[in-house]
Length: 276
Ligand SMILES: NC(=O)c1ccc[n+]([C@@H]2O[C@H](COP(=O)([O-])OP(=O)(O)OC[C@H]3O[C@@H](n4cnc5c(N)ncnc54)[C@H](O)[C@@H]3O)[C@@H](O)[C@H]2O)c1
Image (cartoon, rainbow, N blue to C red; front, top):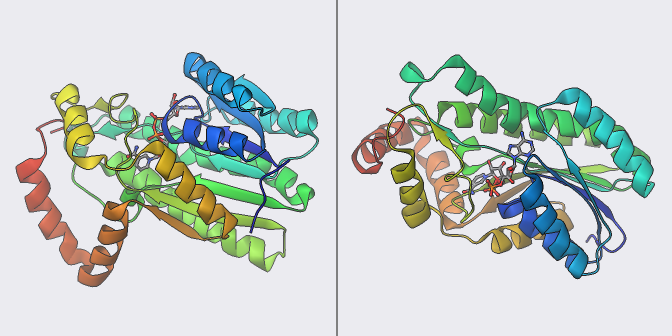
């Protein structure tokens, strides 16, 4: 079991949603926080709430896709707090678009933030986590890192890649006997701004976001954060969040690639015609 008191926790994408909920939960449990985001207003609000809970907080504007900046940030944070124990590579963006009509740049943007952002954060902080003698990397994949759906190829690619990267990292830390635990997080639909901030290749982005908010997002960010921290405490390799993630994980393992036929029919019928 991990006691978070006095631990230094780095959270990317802390200006909203799951990142903010993680920051506030960790603040309540006595952690020191290095919070970053590209959204400086959201970040300042998270910091205000975390400080009101008594936490020591450092905030930085950081784009996780900018490798040099992330490398410099990691050294600065380690110097500032004297150590780093927990790194939540949480920042992420959504994009919906069939491959046929998606621009290369849209697919690359999702990979840059959702995949390379995780790689940048992991590699930049790894030496500091090892040096701490008590480190934990928590990388956020998705339910869509366990199965694909039409229109989500870019997001699916990034989140499957995060899962592969994170699972290999966990084994490597074990083999090297480094004092770094590794957890991969797979949220189902969480009630955050992700769909509203998302972009689409074509069609009605607002209708898609409304559909997500109304029918797909069931879990609160606060409940998601609690589940992630429980997984961290229990050193879980994989944390599934929400009934949807838990059910579909088992379903896909049971039916194998037949899930694709079922999903093609279901999503073709019920999803708004955005991104197609
Ligand atoms: N909400 C869901 O249903 C859901 C499901 C599965 C996975 N996830 C993942 O959870 C993570 C958190 O998402 P959320 O739902 O809280 O969304 P959110 O939009 O509420 O929060 C994401 C935060 O990341 C920040 N961000 C975006 N691009 C960034 C960049 N380049 N550098 C730094 N920060 C950046 C945003 O400004 C925002 O504050 C993401 O990785 C997302 O893919 C969310």
